[in-house]
Length: 385
Image (tube, rainbow, N blue to C red; front, side, top):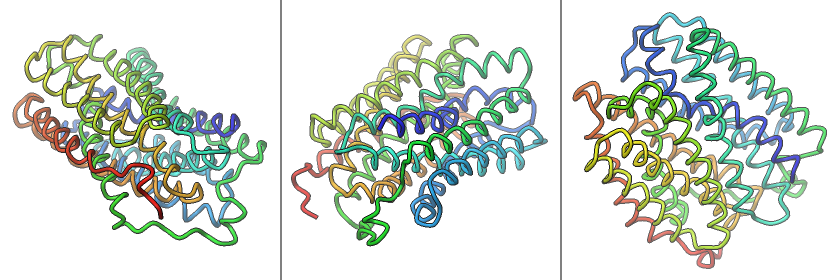
């Protein structure tokens, strides 16, 4: 299992810099002359491409080995960032970051999750929580590095550095996968694939809806953290540091969510996650000053992180491990929809009003709905299929 976790770390940490996207907002807007709404569309498009890559992986895994797929994922992401270095406006930025970078990240994310679950003797929420925590860990590392290199060298050299890291991660991850003899599909599943889970399955539908509601608020924060702190009066240094702080909270809460679902029922963890995010939305609405805004946005990120880690640990408790990638990929469509909805709406509302108050109130309403819906998530013992 250690080898599988190393592969996951090698791939997910560089691709996790997608959560440091807010660091690129103002430099990209100034260099390319794009609006905050257009930058929100690029981020949302990257999440759509991520979801597409996630759902392609289970199909590709039956035709190609894990090592070639992991290598391809790293190279596709690197090529996308290289396209961004040549961007002169919105469309090349969209193709490079919004399509290619996202697609590579989606392929790698589901591949390493499936790899870890195949290598784990029994379902482990903690292991799955670690895997999903490596994405915000990547942003926690990437945000200060990007901020420093943008200040020292400019945006284009920073993007070249990211492309080099992504390409190297694909090579390293593929080599580790092959050397350790890991697999994406068990021998039994290769001979007789397990029956797919219907999209209408009520257990899956409830999990999907609650995940969507928690992710909406979290992705709004992750995509625009630095800009949101700036809007609430924070200085440049605090706004830049906010991305690191919030992604650190997200990484810890994803790990915690995975551990909690090993010991608590999923519905209890999901209710707590949405209440945590709701508390953050209330705090920033009632006390809109920089320090409280940082704490409140961290609570919003923590609520999403708890739900994300718990969901990853919940799937192998209910369904066969050979179906993990397929079910997780479908669940992450909720993540994709969340990124398309509230973060884009938040960007539009910011352009319209000059602030984030309205967007935060929408997030609060979504989290309240998430609390109500989370109470209907099935207990582990309630599922017999």
